[in-house]
Amino acid sequence: MAINLVKGQRLELDSGLSKLKVEMGWALSENARYDLDASTFLLGESGQVENEYDFVFYGSPNKTTVDGVERPCSVDMSVLGSVDDLGDDDESGEGNEEIEVDLTKTSSNIKEILFTVSIYYNPNDPNDPQRKFNFGQVRNAFIQIKNSLTNEIICRYDLDEDFSTSKGVEFGRLYRRGTEWKFQAVGESHADGLLSICKKYASKFM
Image (tube, rainbow, N blue to C red):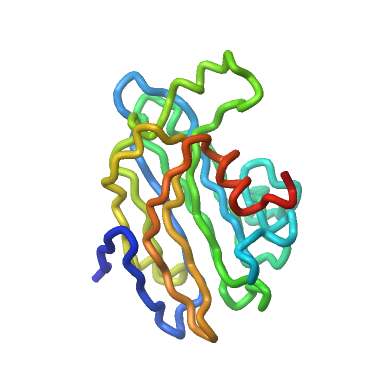
């Protein structure tokens, strides 16, 4: 049975669990049609991205082909980014992105894997209509960790906080303690979306 987490709660993963699917989903309020994107940051001891290819997102230059589909990936190939089909732009307003993580491939210098979702907009264009949107129009947001081999849901975090002034949210993170991996429900917001998340975790590449 899946364990339901609350903000800040942590869960130690079974030592035999190494191949994971990290699923993040949401629904948009009626008449709110815009694109949300999942991004993953692989962080070193400093709490920062130390290799530009360890920022895995829709525009990643580092890619691999899996079952005929090109996917962004980390430099150690431990993280395969989601395939963004723009599903949250359709009439249903439903969005869902799935990231694959193989902890057996994670480089020893990686101490944390952070999962975020942000509203796509052009921060350099003051007239971009996407600027008016925020997570106040997002409902039923969640992140859940699955066993990739069995598809069993290990744990789930439903984000029920008010992020109405934010364009980006840290949903959750996997982090290493010795030889063990744990998951934490985060729920931390960022007013400027992916831009401010990158300034926090990938400052050397900004």
